[in-house]
Length: 357
Image (cartoon, rainbow, N blue to C red; front, side, top):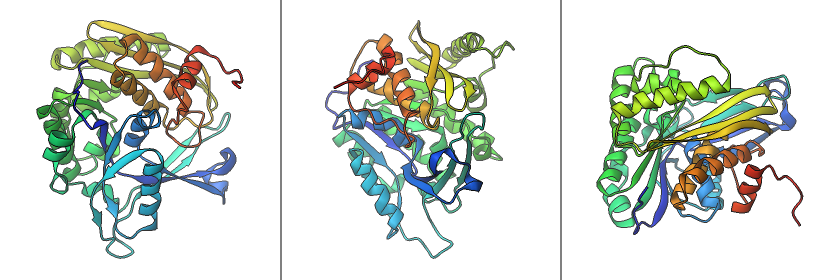
């Protein structure tokens, strides 16, 4: 996949930043009075692999003016080696804007995770193309890969238009486009026609599409696979059938990807992945991984694939590196992977957990 050579940024992503509250020591939310606060968004989770491994990443977002949470978010993004740009909106009183709050019970053993999204007054829903100079960002600064998520495209009518305009500007200036469909039923309720049109246009100019079978059906209207077993082998064949149908509708998309997961317990998963590049399929055969916190594993997988593409490796390595960065993310209390270096990621892929001194 040919990438723009004169770009200032390896990756750019539009997002709505928020915070995550997680009970200590794997405890349930309703039993806890001690919580870890971390900064989060699915889209920056993806960019984190590249930013930690030395590639320049930029975030487009919006902030609440004067909020201490805004200060925490900005400091966090800087600490993750990411540039950011976006307007600051007045809070507008106690019932005004704020950054979203993600309250997460990570689960433990036989008790599965539970996620509670508190998005009332979310400032990210105001993301507006008028607040960003896309000609400067894409024309003068330049971007190799734009990563977008269906979560942001579906937040509000404004964010849908924002993502559309970013896709159009990226296409105009030769940036590659990655689109993780990320269907959320609560976001789509009552807006199906509007969002179908937005998602289909973004998908039509995307070079990389990520999602599970349900995402492709519900976001793009692709006919689902024939009913089959629920084992991972059946899921692989079902995904292949789905993508073959999707290629007929979106022939210019070069890469399709999804993860494969079977949950044995909260802390033990069977983890695999499949990627289609042109006419070739690459499969990371499912195998056991131990899980501290599963949230963000899928984002870590996408982040690893995009990093491998940015490094211009062979496609066989894309899925290997993505599988390993996804597995890495599940070992951390943050929901984003923080690789120390490439060797750490490759050791995970090789199953080498020995001490390194």
